[in-house]
Length: 257
Ligand SMILES: Nc1nc2c(ncn2[C@@H]2O[C@H](COP(=O)(O)OP(=O)(O)O)[C@@H](O)[C@H]2O)c(=O)[nH]1
Ligand SMILES: [Mg+2]
Image (cartoon, rainbow, N blue to C red):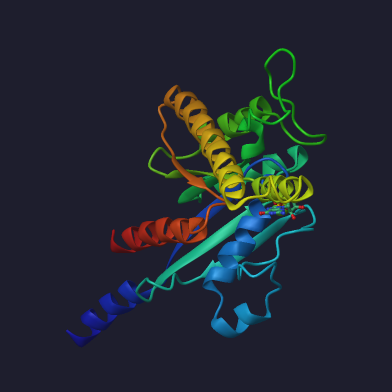
């Protein structure tokens, strides 16, 4: 009996790893997202040593070199019982590297698709005359990004949750700084508390609108393939925790199955 129980116990205690595949076009913020997750799950001492930007306590995300090969983050979610492990794979997103994604898909338990929300920021100067968005040099357009996802979805089991994580790559915080600087330059009469609040509010509205458009666009496209997704606004406060919670809940469910 002891042997039977201890055998069952060791089976139960065996770590179950949830493989999270983090993919998306180059420059869509995957490695920055991984850095934020790493910062969140690192032990307090290690977290102290991570470089930071500003006073927000987040990891430094500027100047990340393009990923060649892969970055891997292994962790036990802080809120999960022992035996629950998560492994996040951040694979390089350059078109030449994408065939490698296919090899990982059959082992993936969660797919995070990263994309650049600036492509949905219609209030910017991104629209071409024909209404099509214009990608920055070397980056995928909306259509190219979608094609890359549509190409891999058939290889992904239907019960694998899809999370679409939109990054802004610092875009909205740059706009916010510029708007406040413009008010400063305009002189004391214009630079009132009310004007500053209004400027910030307008930018928040614009960011929400971009997120709404992206969500509608992707929801419709995914419906066509019989899929659905959860959406994360990657630059909002708490988004790293939101993502971590999703990954934790999923990993715990897998362990219980
Ligand atoms: N300012 C700022 N830059 C960012 C942010 N996230 C990513 N970036 C920059 O945008 C570029 C692309 O991000 P990266 O994570 O390397 O994208 P990946 O190719 O999908 O891994 C890098 O130069 C990052 O440093 C952000 O939140 N703020
Ligand atoms: Mg990268």
